[in-house]
Structures are given as structure tokens and as C-alpha cells.
Length: 443
Image (cartoon, rainbow, N blue to C red; front, side, top):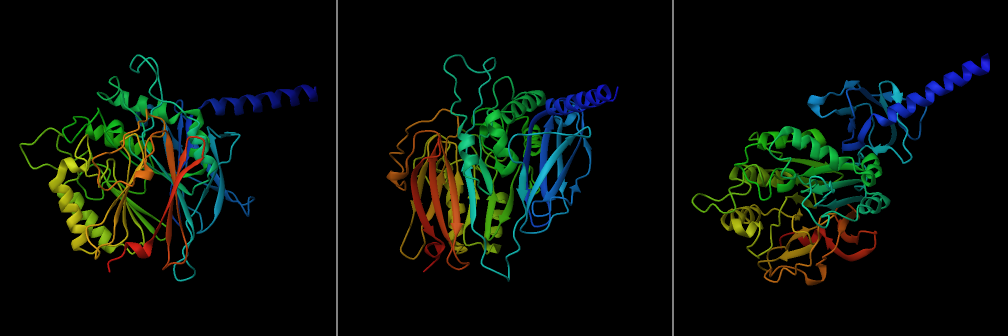
């Protein structure tokens, strides 16, 4: 009798664990990190009560818990909960519980809090991944013919590099014709892309930040006239976990974050955008309000490298497709303000073009060079565009295959060095460049 009861108990426990596993649609994912809190994210398959438990990996017996949250269809079955009992400079393991049952995964689930280094030591070494243009196939809604997405194991290659965080540079998912005219469509597409199996280990143990471009905002080349721009904003915020959005109080997803001594400025190149083909009015891609906020924030920043993330290329002199050169007056305003304010250490990060390239602009010997790193594509169709008309491109950095970047910042506080490594889908290095913070200063 006792053996039967034990067998029944084990059977029920096993079934409940399996059931909990089946209730996870995508994730968990670790989002922004600070010294005192980290945002944790997960999506369930149906309405469920969710909470996380976490622990300092040096003291695993002391368990901490987030609040509980019930997912529902109206919020895409997404739970975003804050681990708010952490201490600086720690690594934590965590577990997700669905309806009270722990979800088991066969890969690490961990996060880190940022280090309190100020007034104590040199800033820590930082490694972060970048990439853009992630197309996940869904045959019944894709265009006929050869699938546009491929090489999904690239996410396993990124995961193996163990970056501190990943910055997604737009087109992180591709809305289809069936998606962008309804909130239902938005939720389906974001859910389908986020559920890619190859992506799950990377989501679970690397912090994630994101901006958007046209394909995760609306139709191809979508602009500020897009009728569902508010829905686009809502769903983007639901599926990503930046520490802030719309810091200019004008709508959209503009924001910023810090990691160690670095600062990142996340721009919105869609919400305020004039149509690419509208030349009857003042042409804007970012809008004066967003640019003026950026200049003010850059002036206030003491970061040796100030990374400005934007969906499309900034410095490319080739005025075609959706490059900023097609909004020449506004681009001139932005670059003039950077120079006028004598802001040092600016590096642009962007995607969009389905190839990778580094551009370098230096107007005179008195001015430091501005760099623009385009990193694309992760899984969407890639190309071998040579940017023949771009006078600022560094020829040796052109990559026409699926790739990603790992950026490393190291060295003493006053001698920081940025090392850019671009890798192919298998994690093999394609090229490397070093940029010293001291070389991004005015003479």
C-alpha cells in the first residue's frame, strides 16, 4: 500500500512538472540590470500565476522571491517581475514557477547585478553582443518560395560567447502582411519569434535591451503616419525590458541605460519619421525634440564611450534606401550639435542593411573621428552590398553573411579601449578593430 501511495505521489509530481513545462510559451528572459534590481520576463501559454525565486550563487540556501503575477490573454500571457532584493556585483541563479510548480530547463538560468565600482576601483571589463534583422520563418504566412530566415544556430553561438548583455538593433522580429493591421497580429508575430527554440538559452542568462526599426514597428519602411503606432509601442514594451521608454514624453520608445562606465542612448527612428517619399514638408527621422534630448544627455554623460543606438545607418554618405543621408538636413543638425557641444566618445550602433560595415568620419585634424558600426543580419536574408558610394566605409569591415558582434571595453578608467569583434554564424571571428577612448577626444 505504501509503495502504491509513493508511486502515485511521484506520478502526480512528475505530471505537475511536465504540465508546468508545457505552460511556458517563451523565456524566461533576463532584461535590464542595475545594482539594486533586475527585470525578469516570461510568457505562458495560457492564464497562469507566475513568480520567480532567485538566490546569490555564493549563498544558494538563502532564497528570495518576486511578487506573483497572473498572466492573461490581454497582456499576451506575459509576466514581467522585478527581482528587487539583490546586491551590487553579484551573480544570481533563478527559477520560474508556474501555478506554484517549478519549471525545469536544461540550460543555465542566471543573471547579474551591476558592480559598484565608483570611488573604489577601475570600472569592470564589459562584453556585450549586438545584432539586428531576425527573421523566423512561419510558412503559412511567409511569401512563397525560399524561406527568408536561416542559420538560427547563430543564437547558440552568441550564447557561447557569454556576453554580459545583448543590444538588439532593430528588426528584431518581422511583422508580416497578416500581422501589422491588428493587435492580434502583433501579439502573434512577437510570440512566434520569441518562441524560437535556439534562442531560449541566450534569453535565459544574458541581459537584453532593444530598439526597433520598421519591421518590428509596422510595414516595410513604416513612418510616423502608421495608424497602429501606439499598438506597436505597447507590444514592443510588453516583449522587451528596457529600464525606461519615451523619456521625451512624446510617444515612442526613446530611452537610455548605463552599464559600468558606459552609456547607451536608445533612439526611435520610426515614431516621428516623415515618409521617405514626402518632400513637401520639413523632413525628420528623429525629430528635433528627440535630438535635443540626445544632445543634452550626451553633454551630461561622463562615459568614455557613448553608444548611440538607432535603427538605420547614420554616417553612410550613400543617400539611398533609408540611410540618414536621405534626411540630410536633420542629420547635419545632429552632427553639428555633437561638434558644437564638443561631445567626446560618440559611437553610433545600427542595423537595417543586411550586411555589416564600419564607417569612420573625420572632418578635420582638430576633431576626433566619429564611428558608425552597422551590424546585420542575424537570420534574415543577407547581402554583399559594397556601399560603393559611402566615402566613410572601411573596406575591410564589409561582411555579407549572417553575423553578430561582441564589443569589449577594458582597461583603467582613463585608458579604456573598445575592441570590436565581428563573428560569423558559427562564432568564428571575421574581423577585429580596436578604438581607444583617448582617440575620441578633441585636440
